[in-house]
Length: 345
Image 1 (cartoon, rainbow, N blue to C red):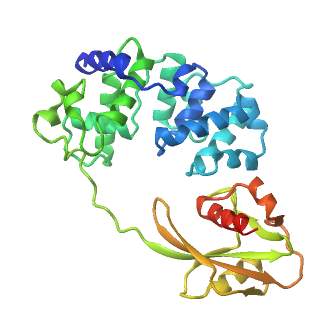
Image 2 (cartoon, one colour; image 1 turned 90 degrees about the vertical axis):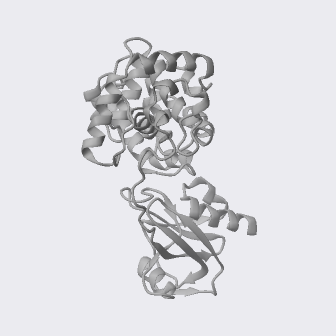
Image 3 (tube, rainbow, N blue to C red; image 1 turned 45 degrees about the vertical axis):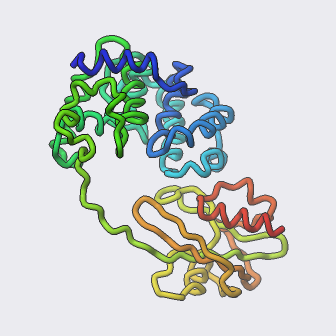
């Protein structure tokens, strides 16, 4: 296995990326970076990482913050389940670990939002412990290096990859090795058009030797992504608009949005909004629409201005001034509505 470890470490010491979370051994800061980097590119994460740590520099600061303020800092980074789990895990660290960041795999795996690979990365980098990681980049490298021409989503293949990920770990510099293999996947062993000519482990790569580097990993059959129509209404009363907080669990949990929902019968926009608010709603002609894609579906969000009859509306609804909307965390699609409203002031 030194065929991977030695050349990879030598390459990393020459070509490793200069990233802000590599300038610290604070497990909290490393944890934040690992969670942010899940399904998000480094260039996008860096400014969020700096802002997040400036606002919540410690586990205690994060645990004591209101969820709305945590979501607001995260706004735009997406996959909000990550930050809700991060916040909840911080509370658990304060309540069950006395504010001391856990340093064993068992303890880390007990925290929400931390799986085996994330735990391994934290333990390797912050505590210099020897644990395998298996994120998307590492899977791709191992599949190519060992020429595994099987569906990577099969359980038996996943188990094989974990075994290989453990076997290639060096006895020394495990922190640098972990960062090196992440860099290799992010900058050289790319999903498309891998840069084999500059790859430090190319001499031992079986996929390269067989000319299969462009066809591995095997790609599963793509399912057709469904499309749905949604509606949102900007209900205005004077200089205030009505917004609603989503349930803490589920898609976009804890974020705020304008009243509406999925339109299951074509053109029934009014009915959807009225069902959500529980009052008669008067909608003007369609204002504009937004197209947005989530992981598992695409949507067209139809926007209307409107009004309601006088009457009390309680939680989860709230009347907010147009200028006050900036204080609330919204999803990416509803942020566009906020910006349009602010531009129209």
